[in-house]
Image (cartoon, rainbow, N blue to C red; front, side, top):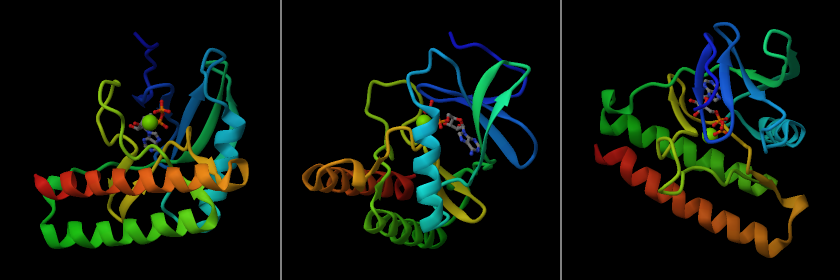
Amino acid sequence: MAKRYPRRLSAGANNVVIALSTTEVGKLFSDDTRSDIGSEATKLKFANQVNDLCARFIRLDINEDLNEDMLVMERLYPMEFRAYEDQIRLLWLDVFEDELKALHDSGFVHRDLCRPSGTPGLKYDNIILTQTGLRLIDVGISVLKSDVSERMFKRFIEREWEEFEIFKKDFLAR
Ligand SMILES: Nc1ncnc2c1ncn2[C@@H]1O[C@H](COP(=O)(O)OP(=O)(O)O)[C@@H](O)[C@H]1O
Ligand SMILES: [Mg+2]
């Protein structure tokens, strides 16, 4: 069982995320966390330069109370998609698709739109519906084109669109 903190918002497969204020959250990277805070910050900043699809990076910091490193970013407030009619959901999906394509064209692939079955958590934990539309968090396993071969990047993009289609179906189904 993961450690609990009073300001804990949520936890994904690897990291605990705590609320810092009404506008900021901190993703904690303890020593035993396998993910790397530096590379996550680099990838997030890369994506932020392209568009607003991914949550905004704010700073890397130390949480003195918890004695852990943290990646501070914009705090998103998830909404329930079932509260919104089809026509607005289609609009959000259109924008999402365009922004995802722009990220791909710039050399960034998210790679974690939907969680493989069998892993803990909800299937689409990393896609957050907000008042301004769909946003992405968690670039932990994202990849920059400059770090991999052409073939590998192309394969990741293909898989991303497959995951996008699965998400789209579910987003409109209920
Ligand atoms: N910017 C954010 N605003 C609000 N909640 C967030 C934010 N980033 C992460 N979270 C919450 O914390 C959880 C874990 O964060 P995530 O980056 O997905 O970590 P992991 O790599 O462990 O999956 C998310 O599923 C989400 O509920
Ligand atoms: Mg996650």
